[in-house]
Length: 115
Length: 114
Image 1: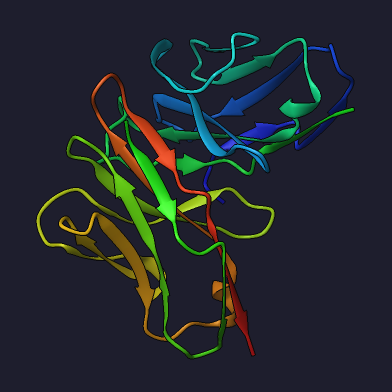
Image 2: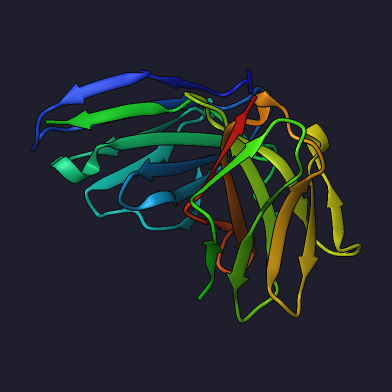
């Protein structure tokens, strides 16, 4: 158990809908990262937040957005969902701002299926 | 731009045999290199990383990797595998320029047979 929790574990929805994925980092960790793992695209970095502020963006679609709240939990919002958005969405957390010297601890993921 | 190539999508091996999972990267700047493991239905776990210094890096569960700058490789090795090593292994690179971002390879599925 990494100490990172993600809810829900599974989510099934229809095209065109909007969903919110939630991530609670390890106690004391200030950074949250979101990743998408799909059969087509593999594992991709989406976005990084540190202490409520966006720090880095990866291959995140405009239909997707994220935020980190004062209690440091983070939410990833996916809207106008398409079949191709079906994937496993991971979040990870680390103590500080994000550097190679830090270890990222991954949650178990949320499996999203868009029908 | 950076990229990571994992040369084998699947590697079957017998228990107690040695294994090498290959990874090549390309980058115009200095990068940091990582290997992660993903067990079935779980998130990723860091095995080891190369930041600087000694090119031979030792990680958890008996794994090690060697950074070879001239060949732009970061191959993962274990001298004797166990059934419990069956998992997906991801090589990754990152750099701190423009924010900390990690790029992953496509993954190598290691299947250890009894």
